[in-house]
Image (cartoon, rainbow, N blue to C red; front, side, top):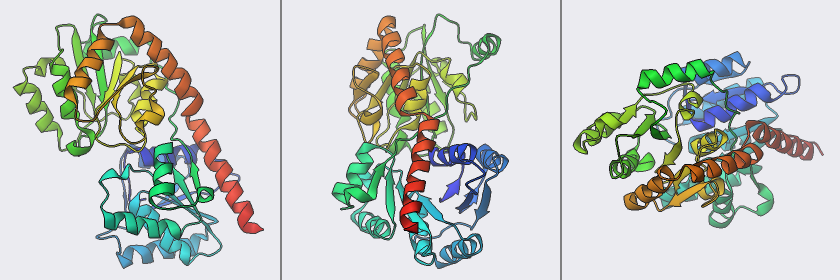
Length: 365
């Protein structure tokens, strides 16, 4: 991995650290840096973390040497690399660890990847024993665009933990603290505010501004360098009093509980983990039809899909759900059933373990 912070890849590794049997698996994470609550939770789960320092470029020989020294000492049976740099580290270190099964995991929606990037990651995946795709769309990219054989690619949908319900008192206190009475219809979104060309919170704010009323609110959970600009946008649109910025929250589920509709305006997503989290909380979803999102959100069943950058379409879909409580309830219930069945953390861990066991048994033959 590149770094351990609070993103989706790190949270999936936390699921593995917590749920894979410690009697059968000893897990270590090699990363450039580690910080935040997920790091603490990984350590609490018994997972070792080795920081090798920042990779200044993809072929930073010092980083590969440090990772190789850790592998030589640990002697892993399985090397599982995720994200671009993580796959490269796993592939190169795996070449010097012939007894290990090497797995590369594609976690990105690569639509903006340059041709040189496609060629490089293709070479890295060719050096692995197997490839994991986090959604069917990503699996298509590995097979059709990179030319990986179907037998070398396994689609394992991302999984999210079951929501922990707040008590009535805790929920009421949070509502009061945020000034949200039961009469409000709350549209919410969750994500890092670091790359507006990716998450496009601005599009969601613009769409909300077109239908903001005294009884609607927009709840944004997340933080980052783009936040001041987004707050300034709300001021220009004269809706600052109707948009709540609550910053980064380690426990996002208690904020999902305050929402009536979840919205995601991303330009690209390999999977869209927050959509699955929202669905497990019985929320209807309005999201962009990009990357792996259509594999998660079923249009007209568990939510509504709109073209990316289409503020008008986003506004119309939000208005449709705001004005129809029964449709919100119906889509939310269908979404929860789908997410519990297809996108649970338990299912994700079980499928990863099944892959580990199969590949290791094949290697031993």
